Length: 88
Image 1 (cartoon, rainbow, N blue to C red):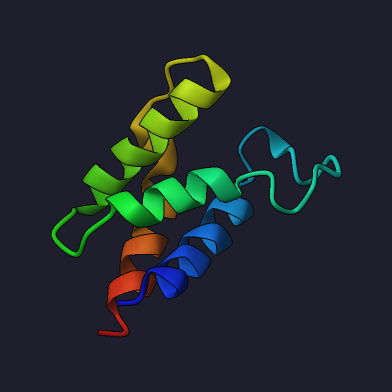
Image 2 (spheres, rainbow, N blue to C red; image 1 turned 90 degrees about the vertical axis):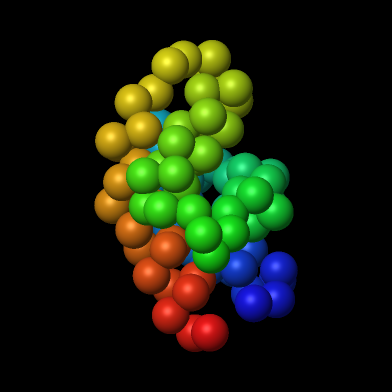
C-alpha cells in the first residue's frame, strides 16, 4: 500500500474519532495530521487491531500529557486495519 493512501485512511478515522472534540470545536482540519502521519509510518500489515490501538494511545499520550487506555481506540484501530489492508 502506498503511504499516501494509508495516511488518508488513518487521517479519516483519527479525525472521525476527534479526540477531545477539537475538530468539533473548530480546530483546523489538519489538527491531527502529524499524528496520522506518524501512524502511517508505524502501522504495518502485521500489526493487530490491539497493536494499532496501542500506537494511537502512545501518540495521544505524548501529545496530550495523559495516560490513555488503548481500549479507547479499539474501534478506530479496527476501522484503520480493515480499510488499510482490505485493498491489497
